[in-house]
Amino acid sequence: MIRVASVPSSHAYVQHLLPVRSGSEREPLSAGSVQLLPDPAPVRVDVPGQWWPPRLLDARWLAEQTDVHFDVLHVHFGFESFAPEELTRTVDHLHGRRLPLVLTVHDLHNPHFTDNVQHLRQLDVLVRAADAVITLTSGAAAWIHDRWGVRSTVVGHPHVVPLDRMDRPRPPSESFVIGVHAKNLRSNMDPLAVMDAVVEAARSLPDATVRLDIDEDVFEHSSHWYNPTIGAKLLDYTSFPDVDVRVHGRFDDDALWDYLSAIDVSVLPYRFGTHSGWLEACRDLGTAVVASDCGYYADQARVHSFRMGVDSFDPATLVAALRASHADRTPAVDSGTRAQQRQRIAETHAEIYRAVIKEMR
Image (cartoon, rainbow, N blue to C red; front, side):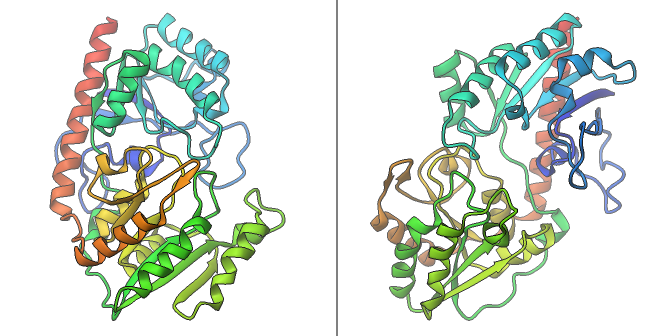
């Protein structure tokens, strides 16, 4: 059994790298060779299930542990909490003890920060030190090779929505609902920029309506995400008779699946980014995706693209993409297909783990 310390372990993406499990979610359908270790508790826990900042990237903490034993450290997210110099100490600690490092590059541009300099400096350390690098698309793999001269294994994104939830039929609808979810106005999102074009596209289609959702954190004074100026401008769309504006708490998983099943297309107004779990959840539930052409969303899955970047936006291409999504409805990915994909993903990861362990011996 290969013991994998994953950063993090509890994230849905990471959990879905394991073999498909039975209805009880306790026993694998086929004998697995990977044991995913639980996330060590951080120094301070502010919310239930918190794993960040990850202790596993703290070289001093690792050196002090006598009861933490693993065969591979696999880094996905969370390293933004550590300066490049700290990450260098961590990889030196690992290699000094002949413990392999596997890195999955999800983000070439951290979606939480407009300035990407620090993120790339962190990746400079991790990519060059990793014994194996994984990424989600061929486009990202080419970018990694161009910058670092490192070859990556491309492994597609697994399902996000639970397999049994994917099997539920979508609720009936009398209109074509275009969804724009502003969420908490994360740094790479610009929903305000796209709304006029979204409304224009909806009015050009015979049965279309617009639904605009905003997390209430945007209006909460004590919230890290407090942004009353942009929030107020988004609320102005309540005056549009064909726009349904809703302000609410952040969706839990079940509420998010219900939301995505209630809209026909989700517009991703990203100024920068690389890959998207939201996109995969839409695929799982049969919701079309209209995404900006930054990053590698179109490499990740079939989407309708429009032109948008850090300093650019072409509204005509967004209108065209929405019209295309209306003409070409997206069926959900079959849960059986997703289960088979997940099994292959689990086997690929196990092979990578075995290879890096063998190389260290």
